[in-house]
Amino acid sequence: MAIMHARFEVSDVVGGDGSSSGGSSPASVSGPSDSDGSSCSSSSAADELFPDARELPSTSASVPVLAGVGFHPISPTSLSVLSDIDVHMQRMARLLPAFASPAAAPRAQALGRWLAGFDVGWVLEMDAGGGGGGGRLPRREVGRRVRVWAQALSTMDRVFRLRHREARNPANETAAAQLAALGELASASAGAMLRLATAVAALGASPSALLAALDVYVPVSEAYPGLARMFSWSTAAADAALAALVDAARRCVRGLPASIRSHYPWRMPQGGEVHPCVGFWMGYFRCMLRNRVSLYLVLAGGDGGETATTPALAPGSEGGLVADLISRLEAVLEEKSGELAFPGLRQVFMLNNTHAIVRRAVRSDLAMFLPPGWARAREERMEGYVKSYLDASWAPVVSRLAAAATKPAAVSVLRRRRDPLAAFNSALENAYSAQRCWKVPSPVLRRVLRRTVSEHVVPAYRRCLEAAETPAAARTVEELERQLSELFEG
Image 1 (cartoon, rainbow, N blue to C red):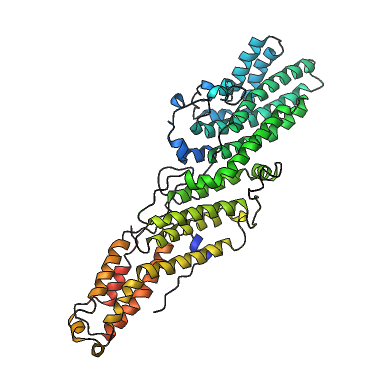
Image 2: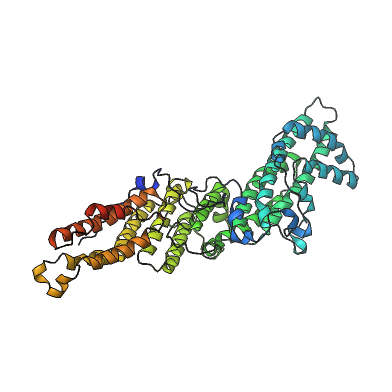
């Protein structure tokens, strides 16, 4: 009997079917969702789900800290203060006199108050080495600190530029003194803020550390050169911090393939549904590309040998970083699917997960970094999974109908005395009872699989009823169709 082939089109795979892919994006740990990772807004997104962060408590009072100094919690309303430029300008006017004095104590006190107004006073509690003394940043705190720090640095940059423009007004009789004090405050602030950049660069290689490094690289590279020109600074400290961030990011990128394989709990779902790692990693790749300019610089720089084995971030190219990482994720899924021993379940698992990967890729900005034909190749792969599923799960069931459909004259008296459909019914019930509990979250895939199974089984059963001497109690074709329509409900 010919095997019915299921055809997948891009519109089917990525259509708005309202399905749940069964995975969690980096921004969510609440359970299955259909998120494609677009909700990620900071490097904390990766930390919230990443297993090496789960062991850490969520409150900063009890987590390991950098250089043994704790962080104070960030209030929910503190971010709104960062956008109030007038408030910061007024505070600066009150604090600048301290920086006109050579005394260190007033300056230190004023700097602490200045940074605290941006909710980043905690940078002063870091050591200049970014983690000396055996301490380290809590991974759960990295994203939150980076987000507040980046917004604070951006706001500081605007405030310094506005104040510098005012101080250079020819009508200002104290312009020279104000510029000198402003330069001292800016220099002290910039030095303190660089401590976080140094601390992030000192983090170990991990996916969450990569997001943090890319998030920090952008504001440092944008703010510090302008401030250096404005106040005639040397850029050596900022350049060193940027170089350290690039080195750290390269280490993290090189470690991503190993992280995909080992840094997620690979407990296999027994219903064949989408593994949570698919939602996490596809969302993570989107978070990674949020700072694609920094990522370009990270992958393009270096001494040549260090990044030679790292794929480039080339939109739409063969062998690009995104395509390579997704392929590695697919390879691990394929390998782990071997743990599902029930006939056909492995193929359903791979079909579910491949479908989820394609939807999340083509419905997001990941698509521009994938080579031509990427989606079509996976659609063909899904067609192969459906065929293999039929071979494993339903070909043995349909084969029972061959004897039942044989003309009575061609079989022995003993075989005619037996119910010719008994073997078929037994195999059908076994397959049905198992597969009714399998999960196919996507309505599109459920329809495809149910239709394909029905087209494979029902015609054979109908021919058997027509050709064989069957008992009156045999189920009707309509009853069989109704039973097969209940598959994959989970």
